[in-house]
Structure formats: C-alpha cells, structure tokens
Image (cartoon, rainbow, N blue to C red; front, side):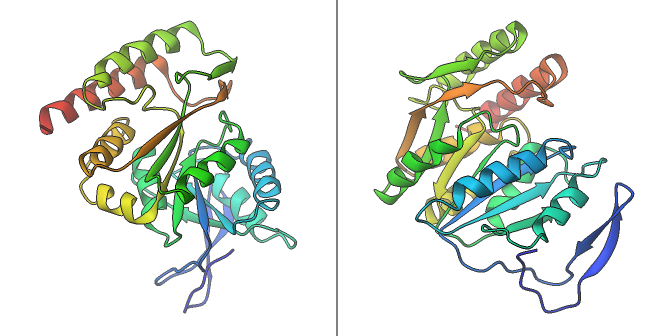
Length: 265
C-alpha cells in the first residue's frame, strides 16, 4: 500500500479476510491529484473500477493517487482493495483508509482531509461519470477554479443510461429544494467533484453535514467564500448496482437538506 509509516504493519480481520493496517500517523507521498473513491460493500465492482482508473490516470501528465475509503463495509471490500494495492506493477499508487462513521459524506470528508495534494476530489465507484471528465477538470483547476463538478443537467449533458422513474422524480424535487440555497448550480448531487486544496480546506472546516446534504453544504460554503465553481456537462450513465434506495434514502436526503436550510442563513 502506498503509505509511509513509522510502525510495523499489523493484520486485522475484515469481512472474514486478513487486511493490513498501519498504526500510528499515516502519511502519503506528494502527488498532483488524489482521487477519492468512497466504498460501501463494493467488493464485486471495485476491481474493475480501480483497473479502469489506474489505466486512465497512468496516461496523464499529472501524478496521481487513488484513495479508497472503506465506509464500514461488511463484505470483502477492504480485503479486495488491500490486495490490489499490493500488486506489483501498479503504475498509479492505491491507498486504503477506513471510515467507521456511516454515510457517504463522512467517507468523502475523511478522504479529502487525509491528503495534502494540490488537487483532490471524489467520484463514485460505479464510474457513472466518464473518467475522461478529469481532463477538462484539471484544466479548469489549473486555470484557477476552486471547484469543478460534473452536472447531469447543464446544457450539453446527456444520459447514456437514464435513471429509473422514481429516482428521476425524486431528483427533480431535490433540485427544486436546493435551487434557492445553492444558486447557479444545476446539479448538486452528481458524484464527481474536484477541488483546489486551499479553497476546499477553507470550506470544509465550516461543514457539519455527513449525510446526503454534504454536497449541498460544501458547495454552499464555497460560494460563501466567493470561490469559483465550474459545472461541466457530462454523458452520465445510471449505475444499475447503485446502493441508493429511492424511498428510504430519498426521505433522508430531503430531511438532511431541510435541516441544513434551518441551520444556515
């Protein structure tokens, strides 16, 4: 695993498998870009995701690292990522860290704040947003943007594989709810967002959300700092194996945003 540590690695059991953990303070060597992938029970999908991401990043001019945040998986996600990270010949290093606090927002926050790279961000393990989106993303960040986010609803975006009807209806309602809060952003929830480190840190220290309102609050905090946010249209593919549950998670999403609206001016 691509970690610098001062103590001997120890093996622990996760999902019935042995995974190596390094005690003490973990530090990762410097790279231009760290890609955070939050993962909950992704043992089946993560090998393909990592291979595709490694192959893409290895061809780019910037140096990169992939950081998988295991968000309390009960399957072999941690073991699988640990095994892949140790394979010889990985042209892009892979790090595995854990986040016992449940919620995608908590996992993303853990990953983003654990590094020191100039640019960092996250995308979902289903690769719903094409990896090629990272090319214009890095261009905009290099030109001074504080954040670059993919959008399924910006002019020019397309749906390669549309969402199910229930999720489309819920998504429309969610956008209406957040429109007055995060002004000028058409899609707060697309799982592809990248940032310049200093701007991200200034916004993150104020964020309190760890659930479905995390993306909304982070973008709002950036706007309050007058940070420039670029929204990129993408060709988006709905993940058939998505862990999002429209009814249960949909109610949680609305409740999180309503709570955020009451808590913030």
